[in-house]
Length: 165
Ligand code: RP5
Image (cartoon, rainbow, N blue to C red; front, side, top):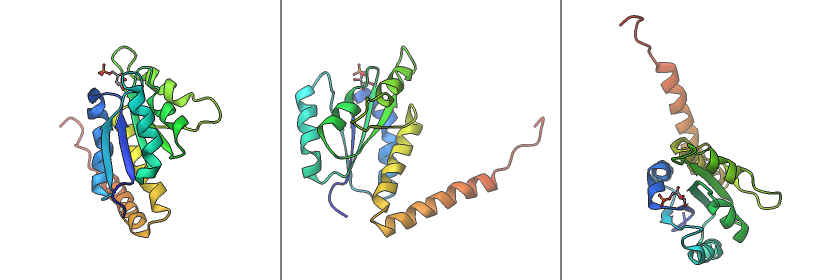
């Protein structure tokens, strides 16, 4: 695999707890990646530079997390052809509903995928990135199939405690 394939980017250091599960998944599947903080409103020039250079740096999928007005994923998607997977970060005031609606409601023409609010969304964004990459990587496809089996095995092995215990 190349040196860098997936870039995980977030609007603030405070988003790390939400986005770190995406990095855990990328590590688990040995997918070359990086994680960065780039703010659409606090460092707009840096965001433009990041998005314009992404493809040339070998990045094939971007996972972008942001909270509140959450314009980072959509703005990056407007500046690159690299697929952007948006992760809404839970906000303090509106519990992430603002982040979700901001990312999911992209006007037609600039596709920006949107996942669930919070760490579950980050996990699934990384798994989705892995599925995209697995289209051209049979070893990765095999690892994903095993992961899926593990999920199923956990459900099958689940034992509930007796009632009243
Ligand atoms: C957004 O504003 C970030 O994505 C973050 O979720 C939210 C709050 O940022 P901080 O004030 O914690 O830096 O840009």
